[in-house]
Structures are given as C-alpha cells and as structure tokens.
Image 1: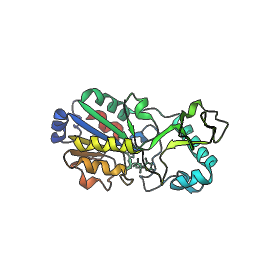
Image 2: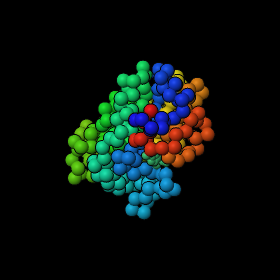
Image 3: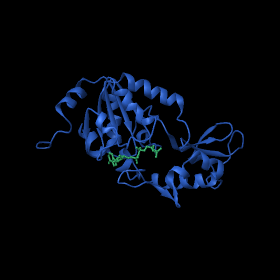
Image 4: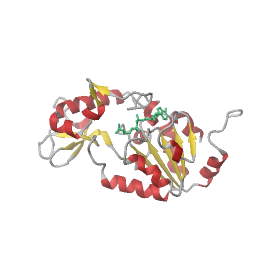
Length: 244
Ligand code: APR
C-alpha cells in the first residue's frame, strides 16, 4: 500500500526473491492472534488448577493421574475449538507455492497450520486432536473417541489412551526431529516465528540453520535467540508474515 513502510530490510527482501529452500519454525506466538494462549511471554506461565503446566503436561502426570491429564487437554481443546487460523497461518500456506522448497516445523499442537491448508507440517510436539494407546501405540482422532470415557480405551487393545503430544520429560519423535534438522541444515533462509526459544531441542534448529542460512526472528519480544539472528523483526506474526 502506498506510504506503508516495507517490512524487513532490503537485504531480506532480496534474499526472499532469491530463496529456494526456506525453513520456518513456529511457536505459540504464531497462534496468539487466533486466540490461543501462549505458555510464556508477558512474564507469566500457564497454570491449571494450581499446577504449573510443566507438571500437568508431564510424563509423570500420565503415570500418576491420567484422567487429570485428559481433563487439562479437554479444557485446551475446548479453547481451541473456537480458534481459527490467522493471516500468519494463511500466508505461510501460500509460501508452499512461492518457494521451491518450504519446510514448516511447529512446536504447536493446535493443528492450525494444517487447518490453514499447509501440507506436511512437521509437528515436533505432536497434535492435541490425536490420542495414542499407552500400550500398543495405536493412534486415533480424539473427536472419534467416546468423550464420556476418560481415559478412553484403545480400539485395538482396550488399554487406556493418552494425548498424542510430547509432554515434559519426554523425547520428541526422533524421525520428525531428524527430518526437521536435515531441512534446517540445507536451507538458505530461516524464519523463527513466535517462539520464546527456551525449549530444546526445538530451539536448536535455528542454530543449525544459522551455519549457512540467513536467520530472521519475528516476535514482539526479544528472545535468547535474537542475538544469533541476522535480522529481528519486532512485530506480530499476523501482520509481519503477510507483509513479507
Ligand atoms: N506474533 C509473534 N510472536 C508472538 C505473538 C505474536 N502475535 N504473541 C506472542 N508472541 C511471542 C512471545 O513474545 C513469546 O516469545 O511468542 C512467544 C511464545 O513463547 P512460549 O509461550 O514460550 O511458546 P513456545 O516458544 O512455542 O513454547 C515452546 O514449550 O510449553 C512448551 O510444548 C510447549 O511447544 C511449547 C514449547
């Protein structure tokens, strides 16, 4: 729009024009404008019934009190049901056609990238709409399970199912992380959007990319990653990404 300040530097616009392999890592901030609460940012962390989310969202809690874990994730699904992809999600979907190769990696379990039409999203921390059997590993869409049964029983072996998300104290799915790290190591442009960059190994991916790529952070607030980035754009994802 005439008179509107272009977003980012001329160097970034030049690199976007030339880029072939683009890598994008997103966090809770990319869904903030869809109404999804972030975990940190603004100096606070989420709490559920007096329990810090690191506790209610932990492997230990699945052992100790699986019904409570389901209650917490049912509550979050209740919040997410009302949330729709925002212009950041939609713009990233369009990037799939714009670049020769786009790898979209997210820490979010909300499924909003896929809901916006993004294909092959690498979900590092799983997906809140999926459940997994605690014994045989069978997966199911939570919306197809009997929601009065908590925990729901596995349709394969009958054992209790748990949310198919990576909880605190658990490893990321190795194959998903390996694929993300491989893409980060060969990209020529890397965007880090809406993450506080304090949770590993996800926060390692931009470091891998920085060995050869131009790394850009998009976040209203500085993070521990900011100094490593070639460029930092202090703004909201829903405004910055569509403008790029
Ligand atoms: N646009 C861009 N960034 C934003 C916006 C916005 N509109 N609003 C907030 N942010 C930024 C905040 O400044 C903060 O740096 O998003 C970041 C959100 O940080 P966290 O809440 O820590 O979320 P994230 O980095 O994704 O957390 C990583 O931790 O809790 C675990 O498994 C969970 O995947 C999550 C992981």
